[in-house]
Length: 250
Length: 250
DNA sequence: CGATTGTTTGAGTATGGTCAACCCTCGTGG
DNA sequence: CCACGAGGGTTGACCATACTCAAACAATCG
Image (cartoon, rainbow over all chains, first blue to last red; front, side):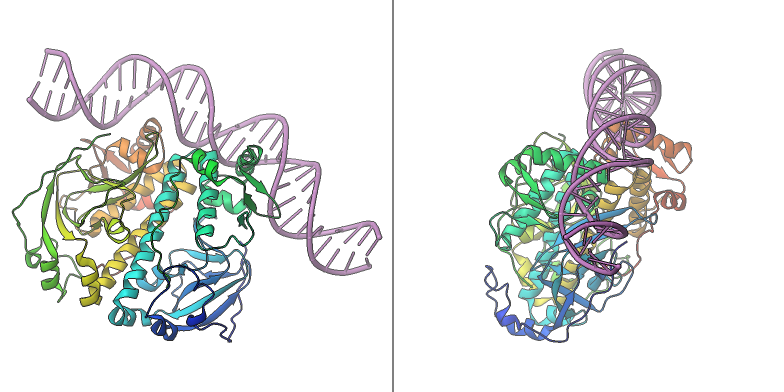
């Protein structure tokens, strides 16, 4: 089990008014002032650090400003299942905020910057800003939708389809948040994590990824993969793609 | 593919004030009057009927008053993955209400009675009743949590553990909503559905269930199973059980 | 009493798992 | 500048879990 504690940064680089994610669509909110007050600070986290632990009661709720995380659950004998990945704009720890105890852990895949919110402020937000409340429910619902897709994959797709689907899925999401600075989308996820996401062994995952490489659909380099042909990946996986609708932030 | 259309019942048997689910804890809401107005009618659905179809845009949101449903997704070649089951008190179609298009289908496992709400009324609910809005988010979050557990199961548990886990899980939920009229909890789910939930073939599911029967953990009868020893099921599955906290309705 | 739907069983196969090396790259320290 | 070690990635051999096919059986319902 990897994961040390991250370190907190007292300084606050961004007010929500000039959040680096603002260029994204659907961030035109009058609620900005409120969110800005709701935001309690920022947290810088090292790669490999554990942000939230299963079983704990966190007083905070986070938003990803930059970096990648993954959510996972463990079985008592150590088997790990990765549930989903979070990238900039995603909420972290909503489940825990609403229901008390965290039922999954969250770990940083890369150095990250998180925005910190107080769990206690949530009811207040619901009282004073129904639009934001609605957005939060929307976000929770979208997470549910992603889990649905994942379940379909793991339950009913073959190893090759699963791998193709996961990579196409992540790459599509990354594109949607504008992480494609360099033209080919880079996915910084080691094969062990891919395996724990797909419900496969490391060895078989490796062989499967190799097949995708031989078909020239992806390319592996420097501990992560680059997508060569997203369309053919989707086709191979029989995946319809992300439905493109509005997406609220915070 | 089974599933015909259900039939609608214009009559309205229950006002929310004397909802048959009222005896459940955490239903002491001042919002009752509002919910009662929010409720647009009731819908009686036959066993096997399709309540909502993937790809459609439903104007309604439902609540289960009685009966069982399941949510599922299909791959283009017909492979089916069942995502979760709904029982009395659960919301149906929230995802579709928030995001427009349904991304999964819903089918009745038994004759059911649903409460019908207008999708358009949702923003109004958020504006005027933050407490209810919070409850809805809570419910969405709980669904997410259940999906997390499911993913862990399908991704990382063996067939035997998976089956044990699913049955223990459903039986625990059924107990929580008070469906244990008769002492042993009865789960009215055919083996084909169990298979499609666990990501296994029908044949292997049957052999697995048989093992659970031989161990005297469950008992199969009349197209459904009865739980004999929930504790040993949980132990076998390495499953911690449902966390018991408040549960809002509607 | 057939028809239908759901469950059971066996035989043979295939997908994916385990074990055990080996290899490559990169960062550290002599 | 090179040796070393650690973390990932790669490969082959062998094994096991789960799948497919096929057939039979049981219960239920007009």
